[in-house]
Length: 422
Image (cartoon, rainbow, N blue to C red; front, side, top):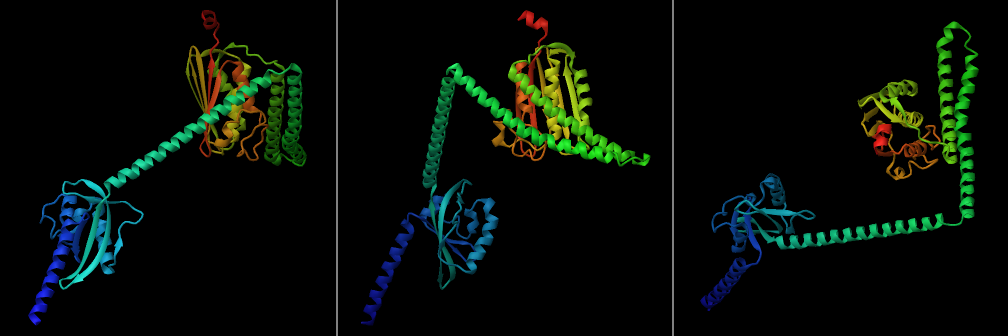
């Protein structure tokens, strides 16, 4: 009876072993068993197929043999840490895992770990799944999503374009309304401009006038010869304030003349380099401490441009570069004069223009939000654009907050010979 029980028990154990062996050999997942030293002691046929090794090539090798070399060193630490407190878990949560084949190629995997003990010691069984196809599918889904986003963006762009076209059509309809309606609209604009003028003038005039008044009062107190330095300091303050007032008045006068159509471009022969050097001498008194205007000129010496309009354009842009740059910074002023085109570049290292403001920077009375307490009417760049238009040129700019702004100007050289030939 006892022998019979043993025989039955032996058959059951044999059947269990055969079933486990079948599961191990025919599993669709790669199975790799390692000991506590991280050495591979067993792997199933699927694992050998996944990694491209023959039956016994991996047994006795470190598990890092199956890991890309760039991750292998860190994996030793991860393995040692896991073996100190092993438990069943998946690997690489929230990260991509890769395995290395015998030929050195890599493929994405999903790995789960399960520790177990036998009479021979402690082991860890790793279940490895090749997820290459899943990754491809995920990538296809990502690409599809990107394509959808691209289509949505194109659709939005089309909607915006149609909206702009509709706005243009509406504007053309409005422009074609009766003369009386246009006149009323113009009158409202003029009234609004007058209101803005009063508001800006009262604000912008107050500071320089207060400076002039206080400095003039203080000069009277310095009657002694040794007070000359203090007197000169206040004289310079008065000159600076008067210059500011003059610029403001010139801006308003220029706008008035432009509104009335009394400004025309009359090109004359001029030695452009000499003219520019003289302008720099005139304007460098506005420079802050340590600021320098770095000027370079190349090309033909004589061009045909409207001297007064050009002076106002350059004075406005260079004074802005000075105003919105810190002490010690440089203003770069470059001219390239050709037979047909004169190119001017003015670059500063100042506060820059915010991206949200750049579309409006040439609008009348507009000032960038980061202009701070710097004096200005918001008319200068509008006047610059109008003057350049009158001269048949074009102006553009690049700007980045905290880096600076660069204004590019192209003006036609209106030489009489060129005009006659045309």
